[in-house]
Length: 306
Ligand code: HEC
Ligand code: HEC
Figure 1 (cartoon, rainbow, N blue to C red):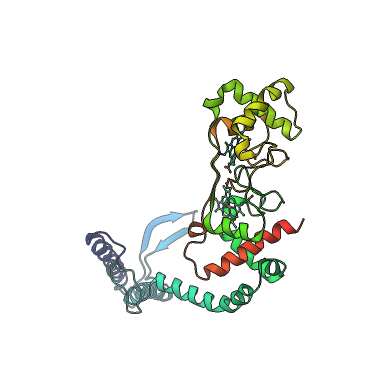
Figure 2 (figure 1 turned 45 degrees about the vertical axis):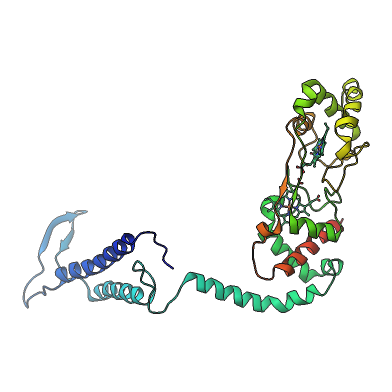
């Protein structure tokens, strides 16, 4: 397959490459053909540096010329064997894609038996296995750490995976479902429906649920509004609903921040955290099922440690 979209560029590159090699050869020959005749003294070139450093017109040393011609020959041989001259594929037929595929095949063959062993075990057993934990950690760092952090402790909008607090659930099947299909938290924007004052009231009620500092008058005004607008997803007591991924609002764990300002922002503008499905995170990598299994066990194991 050609990487070029137009037939002009391969030609352009080939001509420039060939001309520079030939041109360099011709130039260096033209500078080195004249030998000193017996008895002839090398000419002194006009400049003198540092008081007494002078420049003679001696022939270039042979070893140096040898190196120079060597690089030119190397370039020519390289360009015959490997791709480099525009579209020409090279006598060896090497491609970076083929090299990559060969490496993947070798890795697959190496890991296949290891993976097959773990596939026979349930998630809890795999989670307790140190070798599986090490592989799971590598997979996690490759496919998940950019969002959940290298320590899996999460960040604003990206849940902590090492605690016992789950949006969707921390049992093996739910974790596997989360990784396989992804998740999309749908917290609707309610700023307009509630108005600025109403939003502040509900926010203070939410603050009161976890015993945070709040304005008691605003909170009691917000209580009914919470029951009317929020309880359907966050439950009447604010304990959250795993099926919706609606967070528990009664604890100290906040996905988007527990300050009054952050809570008001969550309510007014809504929140839509997206966990991509494994088709995006894992792509079509080899041993996909096994990776899913090991990742599930790794995440499951993280929250079991504490
Ligand atoms: C592009 C960013 C991104 C990547 C990559 C990503 N996640 Fe997530 N993940 C999220 C977000 C955002 C959420 C929260 C979704 C929500 O708010 O509803 C989440 C949620 C989760 C949850 C649910 C947590 C809970 O409390 O129920 C698990 C488990 C999880 N991710 C595991 C993984 C694993 C394992 C990988 C790697 C295969 C991964 N994630 C890769 C962004 C990401
Ligand atoms: C349709 C269901 C639904 C309704 C109704 C709803 N929420 Fe939510 N809420 C969610 C979901 C789902 C999330 C998590 C969003 C995410 O994962 O990105 C969330 C997130 C939040 C958060 C952020 C929590 C954190 O840990 O940072 C707050 C605060 C919140 N909701 C408060 C409210 C309040 C107050 C109301 C009523 C005015 C309300 N929600 C109505 C589903 C809902």
